[in-house]
Length: 261
Image (cartoon, rainbow, N blue to C red):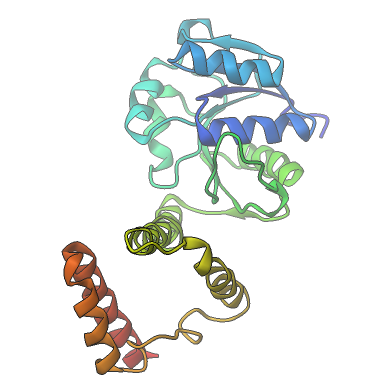
């Protein structure tokens, strides 16, 4: 990778920026600098990376081969307008924002989207994280592919349109699913029961989804159209009106989906 990306500046020190920057360092890249509007966040991540913190975009290092924007979607357009090096290669890590949101920063733009959920203090095996790449120019795409291959075995070229579809699907598979766990935990804890009881069930459900079509392994009273059990559940949920609505809506969705499978 003699002519590839060697030096990186991470713009953002949140969950994605933290895990990605650490993965880059572990895989031999030099993270020159971490930028964050929060001095505390910049200092904290820079300390872990043994690099320079920055809170002023005007003081970004000019020496990087790649600048990675890992900040909230709403903040990306303003960052692109204020980016001080229009000739440099700038990418963002968002699943839902198009590549063109960076166009005011210059013509060397792209996307480096890791399709995974991250937490600052939780290690992730980056070798199994799908990395979705996009670039305005083929030469820059080749650079991103070389970089991504150092981190992961799952590297994909995806358009902005494909990436937003993946992001929507990820919200269902991850965020909504976790919300269901939170609801289950609430129902149990209010009645003196432990969420721990459900963990083996959650693991087995996830295991099935790893090896089969989720639609084919759907179980439960809705897919069996067991109205007697569903009515009993709704009686129990009369004390949880919001959850009752969700139960009804999801059950109807499962029934409708089963008709088409």
